[in-house]
Image 1 (tube, rainbow, N blue to C red):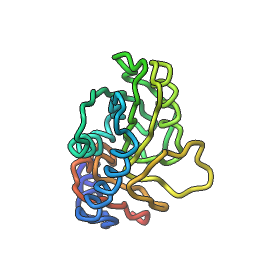
Image 2: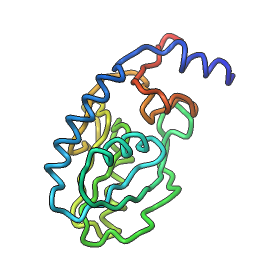
Image 3: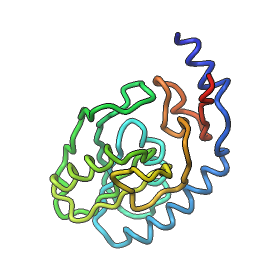
Image 4: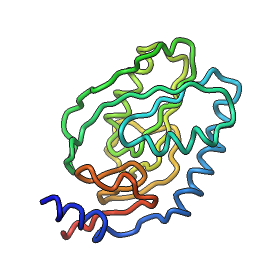
Length: 181
């Protein structure tokens, strides 16, 4: 089973966005974010595990003092279909009076991001700005992030922090699994 998964992720997935396209999209997103958070007491909150690559890329592009925090909740648990939310780590430091930049890999239906915003507000954030690498174009989303680097349609995407059965997070491009496999 694992060999088939590895082949599917690394060998049979199709390129959706090249490394150059992703980098350029993150550059544009960073400019917008820098303008939005200028002069604030900023804490970047990474939604683990998927948001780690975007968080690192954005933080390198924000030339200002900031703090870093992470949270971890999941819906997928190595599956292609979301289930109930499960918290692993809620905010550990006080966010009282701070502007929080909440970063994640993808906003599909918005359930995880919506729950994360609630937790960050409960931890005392003055303002929460949400940004994702990919926003899924769909009518039935319950939450939409403030900003997205890229938009995409249907298909299971991976790379840049997004995975399939634990594989593919390290890809420097964004790929889509072939639904016919």
